[in-house]
Structures are given as structure tokens and as C-alpha cells.
Image 1: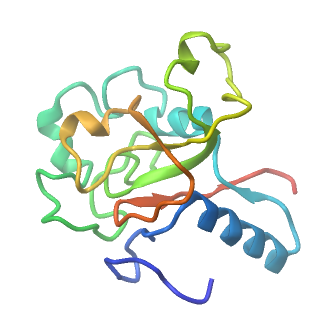
Image 2: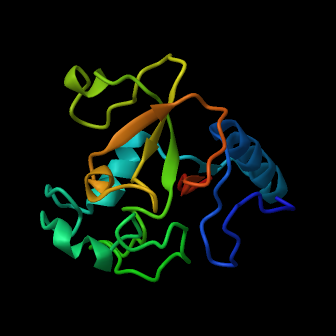
Image 3: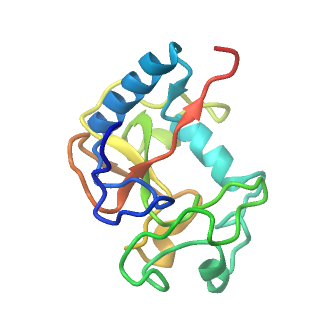
Length: 173
């Protein structure tokens, strides 16, 4: 709040150059300003549910990576920068840029093998760890790094021009 740390500034561009820690500070300030506690990062399970939009395919639009340029900003079409949100096609639920543009921080700790042993319904993520999860791929990544199921871990402190976030809002608060 107050300033945009992004390398690629634009009124509708995603905010990037923010660490997981920066996002937590932003959320605390936003909730204080609004007098609520409804804003937060989505869980990894919530993020993937939204990204897949009811599909089980590689991408929310199917398995053909040749169509990716109609749905996402990635190294095949981005010109090495972010772009205003909503310029490409949305997923079936109307959500834009779930694939590409910026990697999105989620709330979960990262454990590379967690989903092999987690509950299949609404997994809560590991309870501890030194890494946080990023989802969705970015303008810098290849088609394979934009799959609906792709995930990566990072310490919570780096700022990168391809790390951003998407807020979740809890209902009824």
C-alpha cells in the first residue's frame, strides 16, 4: 500500500517484486484498513481448484500447449515482461492469468513430496518448513512450467520480477 515495487509498472499489470513476507505485511495492512480479517493468500489447494476450474487436463483449457498463447503470458509470447491482467482468455470460471504472467505466492509451506501422502480432499499443506509455495508459472517460463498442477518452493524472502500474488477473501467476515 502506498507504492508499487514492480519492475514492470502498469495500472493493470500484476504486482511483482514482492516476497511472501511482503505480501503478509500488505494483507495485515489491508485487513486493518478495512476493519476485517477476510483477506489472505489462498491455500495451495484453493489455488489449484480455482486454476483448474473443474477440469482435469494439463491446462484449464485442455492438453494442447499450442493454445497456451491465447490464455497465458509466458516465454513464448511475453516479450520478457508482465502484461495487464485480463488480456488473454480466462479459464472456464472466468479467472484470468491463472497460467503465466507471474508466479503467485500461496499460503502453504512447501514439501516436494507432500501431495503423495496428503488427504485428497482439501489438503491443508505441511505444518512446517523453510520454503513457501508459488503456483501458476510466469512470463519467464516455458509452457511446461504453466501446467495447472505445477508448483515450486522458495524461501519466503526473495523478491523477483516474476513473483506476485492473488488475494483470497474469506466469506462472511
